[in-house]
Length: 157
Image (cartoon, rainbow, N blue to C red):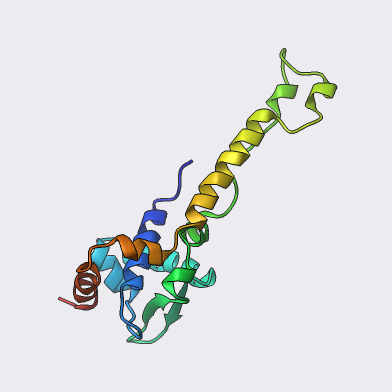
């Protein structure tokens, strides 16, 4: 499975926003500078998180982003699916019915065992990400991380 490069970006941005104090926001430009990313493209990715209900955005000269809900209510799966979609990366095209090796119709009444196993793997991956919240991630960071993130993210050079 290959995820869009922006998946890493939004995971880190959401984690950084989760470290802000209540009422604090960070702009797309601040986040882009913090991670050395292209601001216009990052802003589009952050808007996907807004549409998914992960982030809330405020407009205006002092606008920016913050978490839309408590970190404990935002899962890694919600973030990943906001930019990469929820579709399974495996598509069974029923090649078992094609070519010289084509199986008879009676052997194809049930879902292909390979498609079933790939669907099981995709569901396990989704379940794993659904079981981890941003609060879980924050709990693994060093105690000094939030203050460091706030000071470097919210301070303009």
